[in-house]
View 1 (tube, helix red, strand yellow):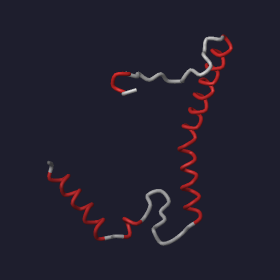
View 2 (tube, rainbow, N blue to C red):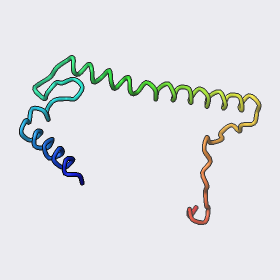
View 3 (tube, helix red, strand yellow):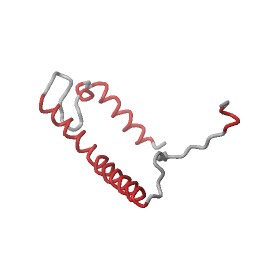
Length: 97
């Protein structure tokens, strides 16, 4: 490795070990582990909801498409009454039944 890179990494590790308060701070909210802060808690929950929203939108669209497909097939009479959504391979020899 380059000597300069090794020196910079060693300097960064030494700085973190010398100043332990830097390791307790959150990189986004700058709140340490001192205690309960309602603003920090609200910020964390808002980030959680913002991260979950795309999954909720895509899941609801996929569910709507699945429901529409099943109801259209049922209207045409192509779907049996108790047909499973996913057919699994079943080997009667190995099942013991």
